[in-house]
Amino acid sequence: KVDTKAIQALDAKHYMHAFTDTKSLGQVGARVIVKGQGIYIWDSEGKRLLDGMSGLWCMNVGYGRTTIADAVHAQMQELPYYNSFFQTTNVPAVQLAAKLVEISPAHFNHVFFAGSGSEGNDTNLRLIRRYWDLKGAKERNIIISRENAYHGSTIAGASLGGMSGMHDQQIGVTIPNIVHIGQPYYVEGGKGKTPEEFGLVAAGWLEQKILEVGAERVAAFIAEPVQGAGGVIIPPSTYWPEIQRICDKYGILLVADEVICGFGRLGTWFGSDYFGIKPDLITFAKGVTSGYIPMGGVLVGDRVADVLIEHGGDFNHGFTYSGHPVAAAAALENIRIIQEEKLIEKVHNETGPYLAKKFGELNDHPLVSIAETCGFVAGLNLVKKKGPTLHECEAFDSSLEVGMICRGHMFGNGMIMRAVGDRMIIAPPLVTTVEQIDEMVGLIRFCLDATLEDLKK
Ligand code: PLP
Image: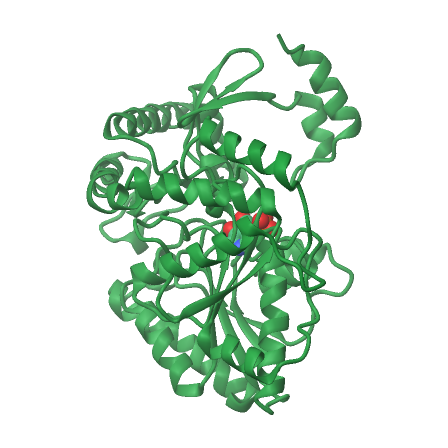
């Protein structure tokens, strides 16, 4: 048995956690996670938690897949590593590239491998730069992104992202030539409009920004199909078609960051399929291996790949672990599972609609103003007073940290749910069954009641 206190003490002494106040964590002690099976994880004290967040949005096929472990083991024994820098390649990476091309939209025929989503987005910056250079349009050197976006934690990824807390902790606020527009968050920006009207307004911010900086200067627009870490911001149906129209009109490259939406999260292989858009580049990571082994990269559409390849010359970019054979073996087995178990079809036809129905029922709770889903991501807002429309609800004073109170109840009662301010979000594993959705939504309702009781005190 794991000695929880000893591990916590060592953790506090030596381990600086990501996105965490290490000092205050040291005072309470980290929860030590020791095991996972299906959609559940266990801590070192034997407590079971339903993982409503799929780890960090990545555990698509669920924990405990022995066939992925077997594939990794076999590949490690055969060839644990080799690089792709010096005109060499390896079998699993090639097979994975072909598989990714098979499952992605038809105009994707090339893959660039990286070690993470952040590295995938760094890759995009160089691909975009090289594409416009080769097209003889060096002046196209501005990238438009969105506020509250999350595109990774490298300096380039965080600069593309719209999280001010990350910008503040960089030397130099962001790398130059990246500008941001507002997010399509109806609850905040849509007052007096229908969601469809607001979708057009929010997409229009892209056109405004293009005209402001000069259309001939803009290289690309990057966005997550559904903004994840920003709080599961599901855009109105009119948003993406209008964004596509604007990118086409000005000849701007469209980059879909599918690190969360890819590999079935929305009930389609990619979020781009869900929204019917045709990006030029797709960033992927997380679900490609279901998090079993780190891997990320970029699907390079024909528009960009054809120019780079036909022109020739080195693409001066890459990572030690680009096309790692063991990660590729894990990804191949992960994708085989997704296909064999028809997980995407299940989310699309059965469990996604069921989650939408059950999660939507939480709208009747006195604390909840908007409970909505899109495939297997979902979010609800905790509000002080409900109103006849979303915009007439009264928010809690943020100092009350109501989201954190609710998150604490969820943890205490055996489920991981994330709080982004007062918006509570989930992204369960794609293997979650209808019975487990009942369990999940039941737990959420129970914890909403407990949060309400706390607020009355
Ligand atoms: N892009 C998006 C949309 C993400 O959600 C994330 C991580 O959460 C990243 C990029 C960064 O991926 P990684 O943490 O693998 O670098």
